[in-house]
Image (cartoon, rainbow, N blue to C red; front, side):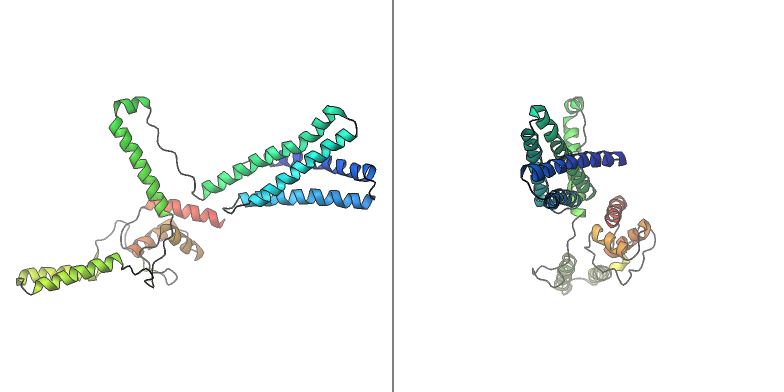
Length: 295
């Protein structure tokens, strides 16, 4: 992030440019256009105030995922107008080329610095939101020549990591009302096994029938899964929906909204909810990212 002295330096440059624009507008309005002092003061104040407001609004837009293109275009329109005014003021005052360049340089410098500042803030916001992918690993030219197959496999694994990370960040809601007419995968599998077992039971020996009954009993009681390495499961609180397909992002946000920020607790909630072990490292990154959003 930009240090405090960077912000101070940017503010000083903006104040200098505003002072030059203020002086040029006041001198042109009172001496050249013969406007009253109060009216000249109001016009200059409105111009500089509008430019500062749109500039601050552009900075706030850059910190979010929303598009602030209109505010940014308005800011640069004010900067272009300010450049025109100060250059014309220098020309009408017979200050020559040097005076026009000196007066016109100030708002141009502010415009360049503002564009670089907005680009930096936008990239940081995209990086914090996880919208910038990690760079692929670099194996080196000699490694590619000596181990081309293994190097290609390394790139494939890195790309798979990108896909899995992108899928983890998605919040896919459960189709509770069966809008799309799709059955749940677990239910469909259980029904298929049940129908197959019923069809085969009529002409099946007793020992095989008992085996099928045990299989069906195991499918109908998912709580009898083997013990997980994370320890005993936690009973799900009432504020946590029982949605086995819930993404890690949604789970983390729900826990943070209800005052649960401990990684181990969220990790055990995830295991109890999904009925299987989850990637603790991915959950840790997701929980940290959601904590940054709330701060």
